[in-house]
Length: 231
Image (cartoon, rainbow, N blue to C red; front, side, top):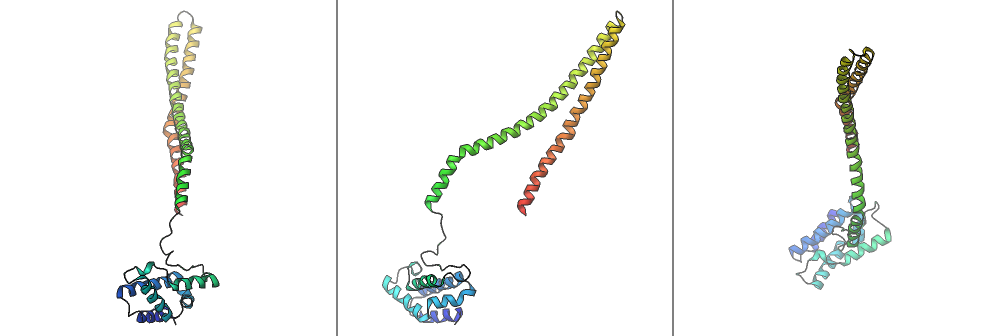
């Protein structure tokens, strides 16, 4: 006997009950077969017994609980038979366990576990916020430090150019009274000018070359992580 034969015989034997109860019973036992899987069809049939026995159990339960109850929510003798069969023979061969009428609903997380998770999250939230704030502070500090360095180098270049102008002017004024001092001052001014050009080039390099390169490198790291997660 296969599943189709079993269900056809069961439906024929249940013609004496109402169509609603019959449909619920058929759906109930179809679900048993679905839960066990096609490869465990014979084990389910052995656990249930012959269709006449199952039909007798259904009718007995209906008479014992009244015609107006919801059949699918009652515990039947067939449920006990399935449970006994599982206890004697283990699971359905591939880890599929028998589902009884009291455990067919969707498994829910225990209330105590939900409460415990909430308590842990509440207790850990200050530490988590502290870690996040610390990381954000470090990141902001690095960014601020980098741009402050660029600003500092640019400011140094500007000061050196000002010193170039001042020393050249003063040197020109002093050359009439003391040529040696005047030449020294103008030479110092030219040195300051050279350093100013160097600092200005460094500022441009840091702002227009190094900064975009760093941003591109960081973006590449995030992109690689995202690709790894997708894989």
